[in-house]
Amino acid sequence: MAKKLCLASLGLIVLSLFFPWHHVEVLGIKVTQGIFAGDETKPDAYLIILAPVILAALLGGLLGMKRFGRGLGITVTIFAILGGLLVMMIQSGIAEKGGATSLGGYLGILAVLLTLAAGLIGTVKPEPKKA
Image 1 (cartoon, rainbow, N blue to C red):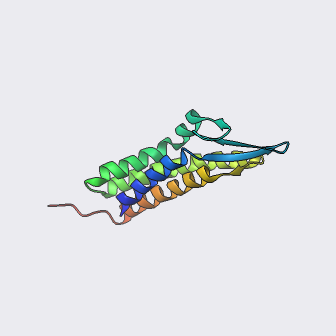
Image 2: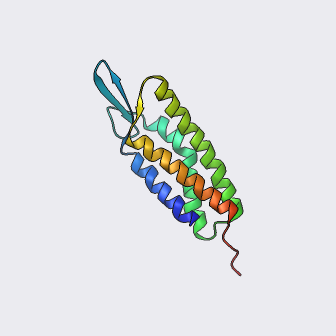
Image 3: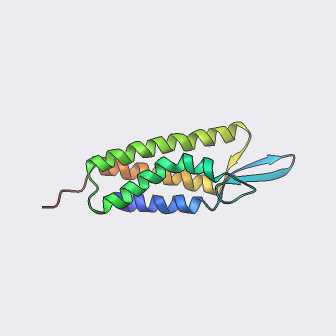
């Protein structure tokens, strides 16, 4: 279950790359900002922010194929929390400037939550060792 959540989270992250993350209205003109979509694109900044979540989803999805144990669950949880803090930092910065979250931002938040849930599931109920 945890590895499937990590793979779903990875799919959501890839999907969020192609939607605007935020929009701000300046003088009646709506300006969108995203990773690869929107009026202003900032791939470097957003990919650095999403790096912990991408790493957690990759670790859980690829290494979890063999066995999603407690150690992997703790690692995925730590990276998901770090990524969640970075995403929330960006969300609060945009909200202070009067902006709002768009579809890509919501998909990114959902990906963080799915990765965190996968890490917690792997920590609480790890897969048994195969003999």
